[in-house]
Length: 289
Ligand code: R1P
Image 1 (tube, rainbow, N blue to C red):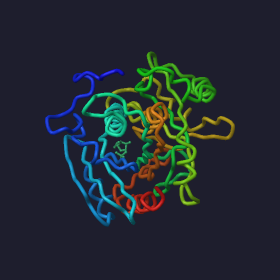
Image 2 (cartoon, helix red, strand yellow):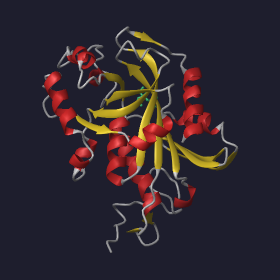
Image 3 (cartoon, rainbow, N blue to C red):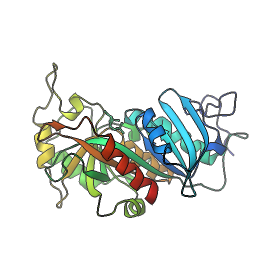
Image 4 (cartoon, helix red, strand yellow):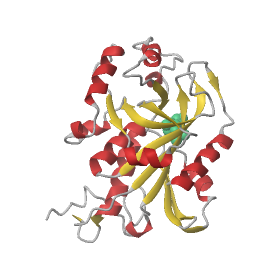
């Protein structure tokens, strides 16, 4: 059996995993992911009991129970590259024996729901709407570093996307990954729209925001808004859903992202006072996870 070297799976002196600083016994099977470390305390404020709280860099974790369900809430910071760290370390906590550094014989499946904020790209997802990423489009490249991504990607959707967007940004090839279907069914009621979410690899240029630097393709957002593949339109921009859906699917975990729309990118409006609508989404996810 392969023993994973110390440089590949880094375990701290206290027996915790490198970045998250969590120990295997501190992780629940149900995981709520949020970007902002402060939002972890907001989620945990709904817990009936709290068993541990750990902070390391942007990764803030609380494990506790909500109506008898053991749940871990962890912050991942911003960006798909952070999701690579969080997903690999959560998976290691669940599926690697830290004492022998070998993969455990029985696979433990995690259920991972990211609750985020997002910019809307269509009139039917105004500020205040909740949108689940039934499919995620990755402008990042995280999953390309792993083998056999074809088995989790929607290649036909990718082809339509590159054609309709007349994709010309050199060195980048957007990928498309569906979220876990059973989890979408479980979490998404009539109060959550099923959408197609772009996970951009930046907040400004990669989402078509022009401050001082001109954009390589100034028409890209217009083309994104006009995109239509078998009746599916692109609903929103955020920055993590693609690598979350992709890595979780490759690993065998159930994962999805659901976001509260806090900015209307078409109408150019913004709700800076979005915390109320976000707590509504947090409560919904805690009930349904
Ligand atoms: C950018 O401001 C951040 O907000 C969105 C983006 O995905 C990115 O992480 O989500 P969160 O509110 O979950 O962090």
